[in-house]
Length: 210
Image 1 (cartoon, rainbow, N blue to C red):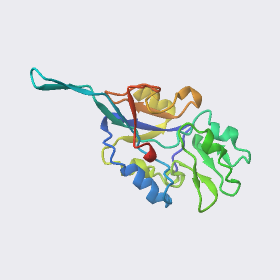
Image 2: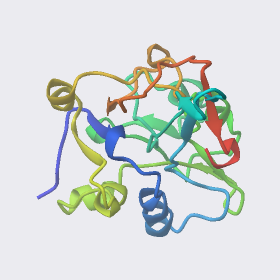
Image 3: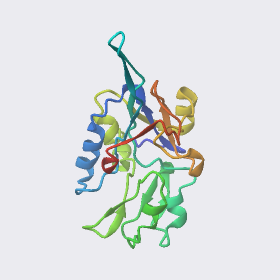
């Protein structure tokens, strides 16, 4: 039986994430994505410093690092849908934001507008592509590929309202943008060192991978 939701959402437990990127690899493999196209990424946010006490020959540190498994958040107010001139980008069944490949003209407006970098241009096909929440797997009562592949059980999914009831409504975590921009359907259990969006005490590691 197909799994149905009013508004589907991803849940991320940052405390458990080791940055192994098994979710990212599973997504690329499942959807046969070309080089340079990653519907799910695992950005690393790190910062802090350490200093040596020359008298005692000891050091203190306030360094931190944490990871956030991230894909499209199937937002309540998806800017990608708003700016799409061809109506290829749309919000449909289960609240999933998807792109119609037969209608997309490859203008990349959605790519420029999305603060999460979710829509990705496939140069081989000349169109935009993005996470569709593994709709085919949901239809067969299976978990999305990223959720199924995670060895640490970092990821989960479900009805957005139910996930927020169980885990809180936190989505305001650096290096993610201000959630008020699009009202993303992502629920995060923050890492103990997590910083709010806009934080300047850390920075995105290897931004080319994020």
